[in-house]
Length: 333
Image (cartoon, rainbow, N blue to C red):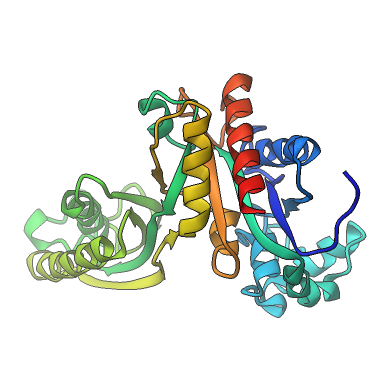
């Protein structure tokens, strides 16, 4: 199809992966994007975002945040990897001008909206017994940082009633965080740092990070209030000081109603039931949705494996998802 002037509807995803990750997370949506654009009756842009995973510099959704204008260029360019290499220098080494990052939001004017095709990172679509499903929303996410302060003591000679064991208190808090979460919510103790981290010493200090996700932000707020009360009670019972703060809160993303309607209609026309799912992972489409109409379709992942070499989708399922995205984009355009 001959070139048409901007702005365009776009389709795409990202190409980067986590370490030892799979070949489909992100890349499937980029490859499908080119196939969709080639077959489309309307002009489409194909987007391949950089650094959605943020694996090297802890800069998740780097490319989409740059486009949306929600990235702080000076902050991210100064970040260093585990070898001490600044992101600014890494970009230069690859022939990319770091100073051009600030101009990225100007490209947003060429975009009317975006759809992203992505491998399902759960078994939700498979449990619906359909090859693909539109996404209603991205779940709300909260990260809680906890510091627990006790006393270092001899592991063999210090009686239990005399201990202020920071690690034991942390373990109890992790379990309580899970118990307080409703069935549709998930919590994860993703990182724990222990001091002095010696096999014969009672732990004196623990830093703990909790990741909590729920369909609605009010569920996170209720959980956080209950966790604060549990932390206070734990401190009283164990004499371990517990300091807990919300490090970050994302209230989730409800995708554009018109985009969702187009996807549901396109899915129904392809013989799929009118299901929508809530996605508990973060995605580029969620970032773009802050500035432009956006939506997503997830491809069935029967094994549920993700961020690993064994992640898999059937080509026929991906083709169905691509047809749904193409039909929705043609309707929206």
